[in-house]
Image (cartoon, rainbow, N blue to C red; front, side):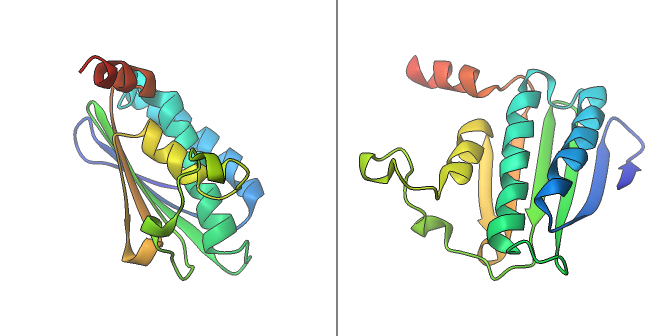
Length: 155
């Protein structure tokens, strides 16, 4: 794990994980300790953790097909009151627009799309690039999923 302190309250980290599901928890646990210490996600830490676990699982399982010769690359940037994370796999990508809504009644039995749905529900911004091999996620501090839903339901 490489951590860069940008001379201020910003921390930038780059790390590569083996394409093994067992590598997810140890990495996420370490990164979340760093995020908690930095204070860049405040009350939104659990949202960030769940979204990160989903992004890593998708990259390892669906992107790299758990190929031990491939890696998942993570770039994390903690700034005051905001965190951004990019997860890149070495797979062929996918069409994010073609993923069915897992909340639609006809898809309740499907095992696909739930991780992307959770990432979008928990983070302020989620976008896929490079044909789906990179997912960028951003979360502002103090913006928990519950707070966002309350604000949007008041409108």
